[in-house]
Image (tube, rainbow over all chains, first blue to last red; front, side):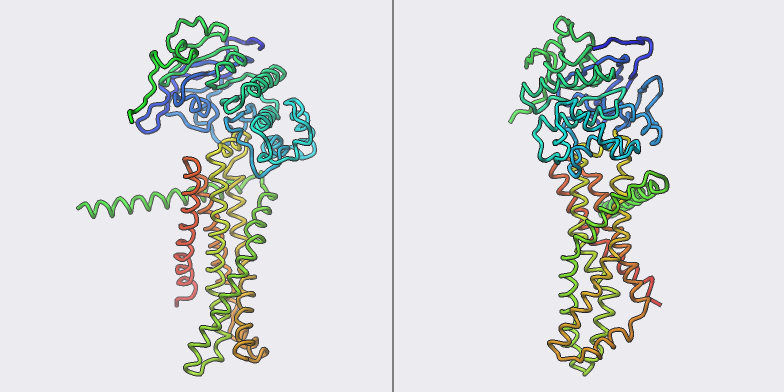
Length: 263
Length: 257
């Protein structure tokens, strides 16, 4: 992917981010930057707070403490109107695709254009057909309902929706979860292609190391609410970090302990 | 002491829940003060609440009117007051049974559907998706349903009233042999505008309550399919109870002098 054009001013900057749910401290003093035009992949075990991190950045959750800056602007505590304007820079591919069941595919993809930006339906539909084409779907798919689509097609439609408004930042939440390896690779290729064509900054969270290596310029590992390692994707196999080694090799033994209660 | 603590905790819990629901409703209504307005969504909700509820409400109304005429005849014939049946049927249906029975039926049909739909949207991240697409979920999902409930239930109740009175008419004419002209004359003889208006005021309040409970419980559902099921149950039960509570309150306010 393209390199950073302005290393001094990261697109997204997170500082001392903290978030708890009751007594469960999910994020604890988390620091991370994502430079302009780079693809950052956050890896980590289940329940370590990857989704919470992304939801805090998007404003879907309010952090207990810390700072999140996008393009240098503090986003924690933004008012609704300002938040909506900020979100117009962003596209999101959700883990379960999160397509609206009550709308046909083309209206799903056009939703942000029509409802969020007030674009006319005809103009929006033209863009939708182009975006569906970009993810390898024909115009006939636009008239189907989400319930009529396979898992892979739903991901493609969700990707088309995420890129419909040519966002500056795209978030991918477990983009390949639940897909067979071939379809997962197809989605990875589409993500790479779309992000490159848009010149967007990408933040992905995943368990899938094949996907992480393929779509990430940089990889960060999250454990117990903190980033325990981050660096170029090409260097992850020689990170020298025991958490990363255990995770990428999928070993049960190591510093990461799964909490399993005896039956 | 423990009993007092329990009563206090329950009271505080009830007040907190009431506060949350009121804030939810006011926040959703406040989104209607500025554009964008989703008229297409409002019309679709009006169709869902009104048109598609017509069969169930119509059936309930006609049998309610028929039973009312039947029961009134049985009672009134004991003291030769059969001539009052038409008046009793129309006043009971228009002031009380039309709005309450329609409200309860719509709560079961529409309130449950709203909670299930919005609850499913919550647990499948569709509401988060709305937010990320720069669309306020309260403005897009909740406000249209509140307005549609407020406007549509009175229209539905007008139809239920007509069908209910017609049910009483059928039983009175074809079973008890009343004169149709006399029956209709007595139906309208003592009916006042305030009777109809009070029924429609109740219907509007009930429509708002049904939508509010459906949206509130759906919007705050958690934990997958079980959470959605629970939200649906809460929506129907709370709307049904509130309909009966507000029915008494509105009747007391309008007619108790």
